Length: 59
Image (cartoon, rainbow, N blue to C red):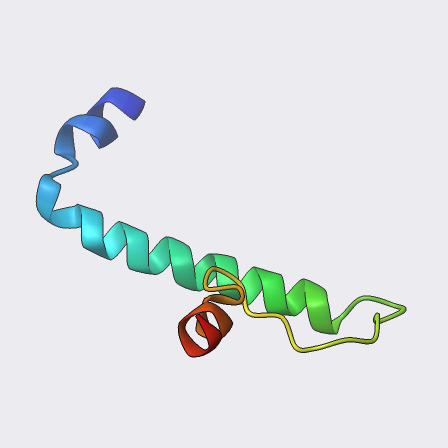
């Protein structure tokens, strides 16, 4: 069964797979962040990109 799934996988499916897995990861991250019983104070987290915007802005 797994071998049929792997053999049917094509190179053109990789971008779709990356986008879908990223959306699932971000959705799961924020679901866990907003539903925890004792939220920690601090800035709003940005998964995947982290603080890259600060590196670009402030060098």
